Image (tube, rainbow, N blue to C red; front, side, top):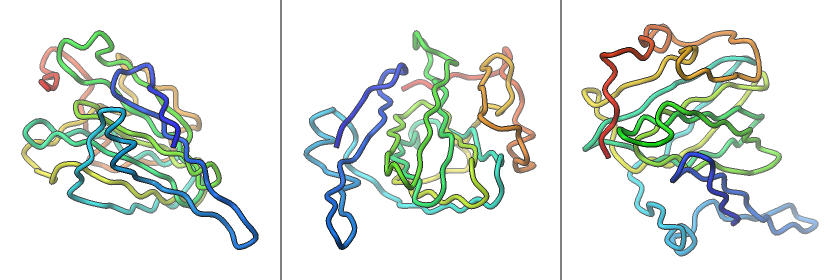
Length: 183
């Protein structure tokens, strides 16, 4: 695996190096030793699988506050997505900055999202599926979010936004009431 730290400290783009032969391919999507070498979380409590049906659909931008703050390792296994994270960490020099990378089934690449980041994605094809490992159990009282169209964040989505959930559309824009995440 090749780990490239993104401009938001602690977040990584992970590229895999598949072994290919006449039967197909084999690759690791997690290795405790390699994650440990980069000081990344190695204990996960959930594995999730999500399908999105429609090009331009956005899911997110979600986060969990401590003590339920989540680390995520995401992989697109069908189609492609524009995977986006926003730094929500209190006193971070990159607070409210975002970064996005394209994850695709073809590339087999992944994104490591550390605690303190909002996460979401936009489907780039009619049918997409992602799997992801999560480092903490979900807790409804600890959830929060960043609006996908918040002008203070300025995410530049790859496609026009076709659809998002009512819940995600109702997330307020960042204002003086927004509480950064203390990690």
